Image (cartoon, rainbow, N blue to C red; front, top):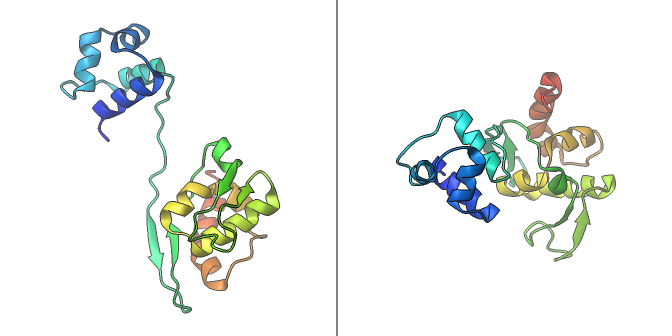
Length: 173
């Protein structure tokens, strides 16, 4: 997504007009229009101001790449290049696992604020989930905290151990 789409989406999500955002951000409506159409590029500080005016923050998030690692038991494991944080409401909220992860109890809702339920969810997602499932459900800091308690096949644990160890050593979460 380009900055033009980002500004347009943030403004629309906030339910604001260009004039209102421009006023709040201390710029002109024609200038904001030029940013939203991609005809002009704002400085980083201006981008921050524009997003703040819509109730959003400009934030740098880790670039996480996933690699598929085959295992001896035929079912591979998706492993990230690094861990990430989820918004608290997502990390500790309720989740209904997709059918391909919870086919035995479809539609069941699990409470991630409950440590035991979170551990069971993480076990299933790390063992069976695709990269998108893992990225949407697993919080890096909470995974590190549970790492010694989650019950995983040896191949899954071996694949994930270097990521966990790197994060623990770096202390970045």
